[in-house]
Image 1 (tube, helix red, strand yellow):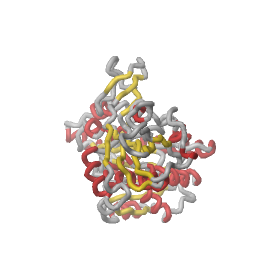
Image 2: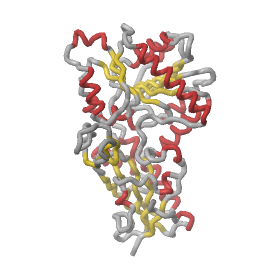
Image 3: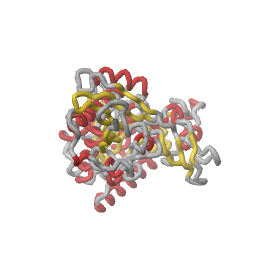
Image 4: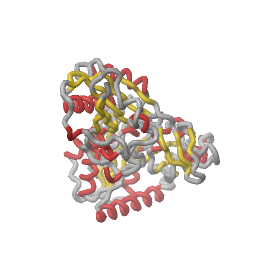
Length: 128
Length: 286
């Protein structure tokens, strides 16, 4: 139900990126939306078609990554996949776990048609 | 800082930026820009401003979430009565329509700002910011934000508050935490309400509800109470006093607290988030 709000925020961010890189158009937008993010991918796609209209992303493809729900057990250290409403350790069954992935709601990247390369100040290391 | 040092790169999204990953090159494009910011970044920046505003006034902000009719307003009425003369309270009310809830709160002698969202199913940080313009925080101890009755959308929006409280009334199913995991994972405290009805209902098992919460890997405490009979209310009041004391300590130390759920990436370095991170540019390979 709140996917339109999410999409409007997404488009605002994409417009800022496009402006910063003097892009003529946005080709694609990749987002990462985990099952525990509270965002439904199908609703997001539909809301996106409304939100992108008339913007620099008017014809941009929306690519949605779905990272799996994974937890790390604080008791035995095991990392395992889990269900959204059963975030317990697959090995020992303990519920004292931390989510490793699955609640992402990220704008991952934007693919642009740009006239000029971006300024050198924007070139930063991407790996941790 | 999070968005430029790479600490928000988790095992779930690492493949997006690692060498040879799908996004380090484009098929025929000129540029691919890796951003790695929350889809709700705009909201989160505003939420940070709201929280700083609360902190400047040493006010504890508590967000109440539940289904419609779970007893949020009734709990607020009982809370106002219980803390009268001890703590100064104000309420921000969120509803699709009507000033009914704000009027109920004002009738108890407490300032209330009503946000009518029209068709929006949740409050966001900008709406709360607008409400704060009408609500002087000087002299206040606790601001309650009563969110729109909805077990889905409000969980995704940081309003700039410090604690999330999720109410579950015993007239609902005790499997609600399993059905709405995003909402219940966001709870810093789960309150089971209307417990005076447990005896006549018979099919709601508080222990099952609490077990369902634990299955979400939540360590949040739970409180059982009835706003009508006041049974268990003292535990809720004690929790509020404890949270207010913690908030005052944080203010002295110059720190703050975010509600239970840290959006992806903030989890690892919650204190180092920059509202205006630099973008990471990856040149497209031909």
